[in-house]
Length: 589
Image 1 (cartoon, rainbow, N blue to C red):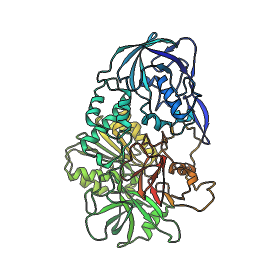
Image 2 (image 1 turned 180 degrees about the horizontal axis):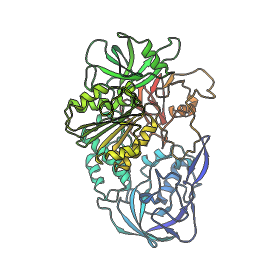
Image 3 (image 1 turned 90 degrees about the horizontal axis):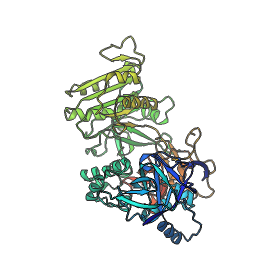
Image 4 (image 1 turned 180 degrees about the vertical axis):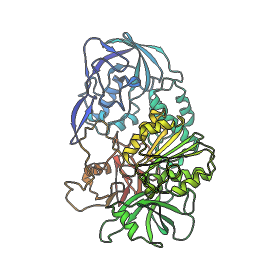
């Protein structure tokens, strides 16, 4: 008979960690007497990061005495106390290789159901002082597991744990954990796991993504789509020389460059929504300038077209507009990106403002080329007709779509602009105006433009009933940071390190989206450490190569790993939390 050894609770608190302050509920301490188990947690307990922990599906975390003994031996430690692994219930019995998802247990006056393994994140390593702990929990097959509360009631140390029902597929916690985090992802196992009603929605989403990946036969690209969406493999490594074959204006502030292979051969087909990375040398004596530009032409064409907005003080856009001529050759990395038009039969909403039209225009080209029968809505916001790019091109493309519709707003139309012809409405695309259009709730929406525009349009579409999983956005600049639990102040602009390590500088690390090139030094530890020293927006969770949150497109160069990730990233990408650059690299950050 399994027994409840300790009930542990703790409220979130701020702790110092690596020069930062992080808010975490990982500190749990045993309590005497009965504790009420409620739908969302135990009385007196809380979580610091509700995105990764807590909630109905993760109300209670369980860890076992047998795992305590394992880690005491493996880590050569004897200082553990109950709750040290962040668990609410320390139990004797219920090992991860025996307990199954969907098993139900009675403990004291409460009834629980097993929903998923523990989420791997850095905080258990923070609590234990073992930075690699997140990886060790997975590789040693001892993650622990979450339960939801089916019947609220009191529990206390010493209660017997009575098994009430078995999970329908009898898949253990260790099996499910390995299915997501370790290589393999066998299709029969994925299908079996997805039949388990009790499995939490988050894990179902991840495993369904792995199954879809298997259906598409894209496993050769590597990576783990259950953990992150990666760009398809690049058509060539690093940068390639492409010739400017055409330059044409699109509006008062936007112009396009058509790029062709120097040898005249067709370029590899790009996918609708992808971008190119261009490396420029406005000053031959200075570091190069690296910029991303969305492809705006027809996917599958023998050439690539990028469209550039002339920024008032933009080094790259000014150089391209004033100095680059037809016949010049540029360094270009292969098409990349995850902002891709989904292959589906549902309606399509293409929303853009200004030069944000470029990636969704490529999607419109793709839909028109196949004479799609899907309902396609083109919604574009511009200042006026003079600043309205691709107007005639879009009209021609929409005319090829049986169910194409156009809504164009001019915030300040001029006297020459014709209402009902050049634009649909005056003013901005407000959330109220979007709701008034009544977009179909089963549509897939693709949004590109200024951050405020994308935020407002996303909120408006959600208010219309579109789930967030159907709303896709593309950011031209640095992506938003993901640093779970870390308390941050006002964002700082990326910069050279305030106190670079002494000694001879190493290879250069270029952060393409932030326009920063920094010399590497081993004192930074990892590429993630270097990015943090420069206040480049970063995304991470486990910091040990497990969760793939930090996976970043590697535009040029290669990296070395220490430790080796449990599953390699997708081809053309790197896990920056556990990698270093042996030579110059360019990262899509």
